[in-house]
Image (tube, rainbow, N blue to C red):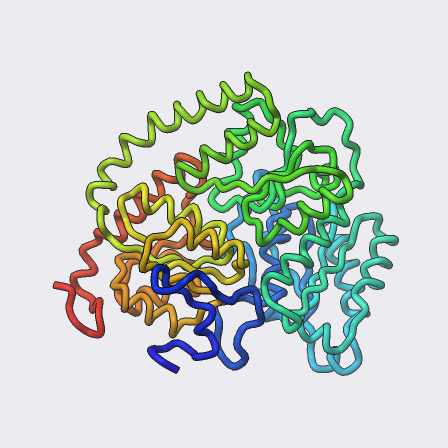
Length: 451
């Protein structure tokens, strides 16, 4: 180990400009090292959880049910069943004799009490070990209650967060094709990979409405079971978080012939280009004109307000570590618009193509890192002397312990950062954090005062 970096992970770190681009990624985390990456169960839970009128039952010990609305703030415009966290609360005797009967009783009781449109049953590590037959229990309850009851094979030990995404996509795919698609416009789409944090999906839906496009299903922010069941009637899938929902887009393209576009709603450049890409797909001159007018209107309000922040933040340094690499692309561009330099960027689940793109858009000297851990991240933050670190709940204490500003860009945040208005919120948050006078009173580099 050198400078907090395990030798086995050296190939998952690249410093742009020091050597031709080459780095390992998309593999199992190093055994024995605490990684920032989450497990299979977590991956499936975060994707499916914002479907607000479904029952979400965790089959396992009570601790696995910790991912609730309070820490994953996906908002709903209607039902809020997803805010409740249900668990079969497996105990020692259940592990010895099996938990299928307990699961059956829990499902019957919860469905009778809450009348959900569908139920998702998440498998946890211990269920995979004792071998409970989730599929047969779900099938039995579905027949008795007349609603889809879907097993989510998400035993935490069998892979990493990306495998959980796949399990969630498979469960959602089983819902599609069940609903009536009569009346759906030819200019329609499904929004994939947006979780409606702080109401962001409502901002994006408004943009599409102004362009003249019908949104059939939100998958999965502010999601509804009925919308998913008729999602196969849409003309296009737009995928923001490609790591979490690209598998579903590919399954729908294969079975229903629905093409997909990768989009990003973060930052000015990517937000505008995503809207233009959608307008180009529908090949409608009037829609393109409406889109150009929409972008002009939004920028005429946004750009003058950004100038104050750009002047204050020019030359400051940022580091990024997020779940999916696609979000990192937009963040690099957003910081560049603010006049800041990104000196480190990484993700939990990036692919070779993702990191190649990060390499292409970053400046020489930028550190690109895959599946990192707290020791490595701390080492990079200190080495680069960054002014702000962007990440999620697991990265927040790393920043604050080092006396570095932090911006929450994960599911715990309460501020909308998508869309043009989101760029203004982001700039304001970065400015308030970086320029806060509190940093004069904390150590920034190995105990040396910043004053």
